[in-house]
Length: 74
Image 1: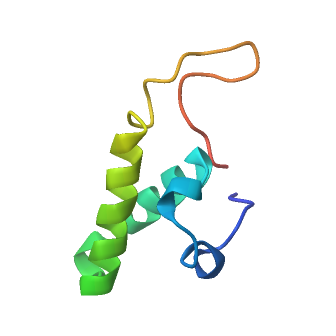
Image 2: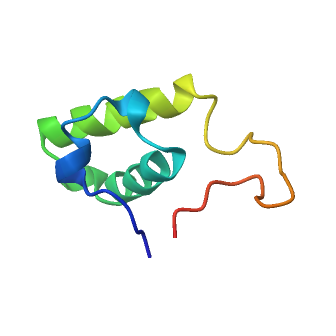
């Protein structure tokens, strides 16, 4: 279960200030409903994807003692 800021709060912030977990969560959700998004929803999803790509993607993170290689948002 996602515990974090909701889209109302995040929509007032730059995507560069979102955490990796927030980007991963909202990307996954918007990806699931992509066929039903209006133009504004598609634009938001594209901005999220662009920010994920600017950060090097979601999966190529190096594992540490406390975290694996994937971003988990639940």
